[in-house]
Image (cartoon, rainbow, N blue to C red; front, top):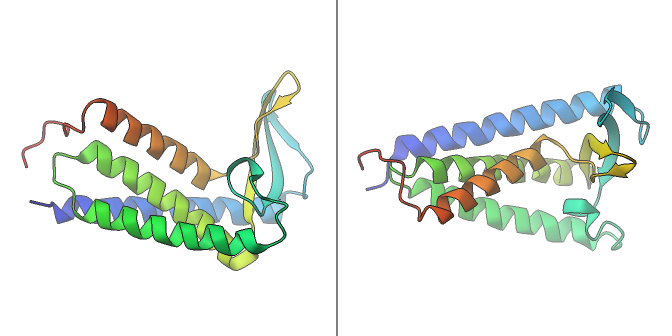
Length: 164
């Protein structure tokens, strides 16, 4: 039997991710100069970038059609994640946490695509002259959520011991 309280809490977490993501992007847009790194730690800069593609700027130079492709993809995936979350049992908390983080991250980046036509990225990690692609809080939530989904899958989706 699905536990609706778990889904509602998951939707709340997704909304929190969206709020943190959008708030941090608004701050970055107002406070940072475009492509001008602000060192925070020896391996961490704040650097404002606009990404018209997907992860790692995939298809960023594709001519504009990718905005609508990634927008449609985010809508479909978000709908599927929200429906999946709605059907979970109380014992599937790890799965619910992972789905909620991915959902919040996907919707956070979707807001950017709809409002701006690109995703605002500003977190830049680097070491010894090697830079990881710039990312944002939504991307981080998606990554952590995907890790939890993999973890849950590897342990056989057994739930976490709660009574259903």
